Image (cartoon, rainbow, N blue to C red):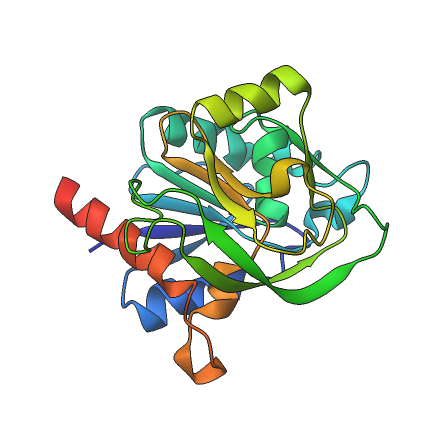
Length: 225
């Protein structure tokens, strides 16, 4: 069994959606981790869900980065364990320095809620091993500050290191540089993405493209155990 922990900040609103996928659809033990908790040593995968942590005051993810649990999340990642940040969670991971770049206001300065086409850039990591290379999948997005930005040197390093896992295919909804929708760290155990895989996991809702991300992770953790 793979033990999932879903971090809950004041303002998180997709935490239960993630838990529904990991606990109810995949049958894995799942614990909600309040942002002030610091005992996560028993967990295999930490998920930082979407929402509006601390109301997105100051800057998206900037305050959440200083929550007590985040130092433990950083240490969890440094041990090679898995961390997934979705939407606001992606923003938190960049603020915490676990991923490069920043997420800024959408190009047209509007909140976007839609379903978009996403290209899987590589399938040789646990997150994407169940997908085909260059596969086009459909995932929902819902964000006002999802434009990925990095300086030229950082962007070049991200590309050279193969850290882009997902790109917007066709229309780029928010103006992200290089159409980037999701990146990992150099080791590949930390993933941040603006699209919501947990909202495309239940076949009853007409799309389960996102479920395969979680399934690939389960296979990897099971192999490690």
